[in-house]
Length: 171
Image (cartoon, rainbow, N blue to C red; front, top):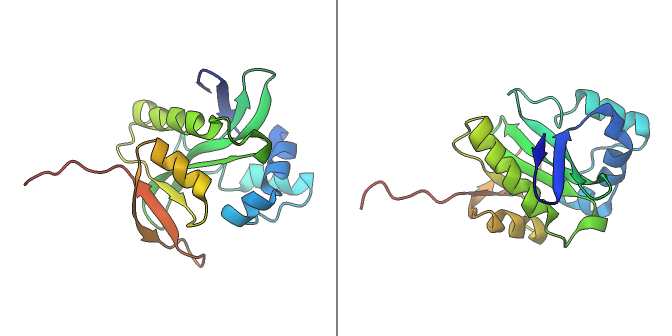
């Protein structure tokens, strides 16, 4: 479990299917992340059992359910995903539009980055987002990440790769 000032996070489980279904059916989610083709609760249960959010090749990776401490209300997901095609660790996040504009994405992503660095020993963590996803770009920049380059994940359009600037090793 990861805890911040206003949030707490735990690994996703099948019991979270209704929230995951609501989140992934949102137009902004489909536009910015993609259509997971979850139409019914059973689809979400299968996704949570077999999908990439909960079945990562590295222990400790995967999406966490992000809950507001006040009322234990699920507001989004945030976690670490190993992007095999790029051989990188990606901090991934998605929040229900009802909870945009409260700083939850930045708060959760910062905590997940610390978890990855301190608990899992990950040296480099990146962020991936679409060109038009200005909210996610702002979150990544609020974490201190900067645009590196465009990359391709399979047959999708190019996405933007963000990371931390490296200190020059020589002048």
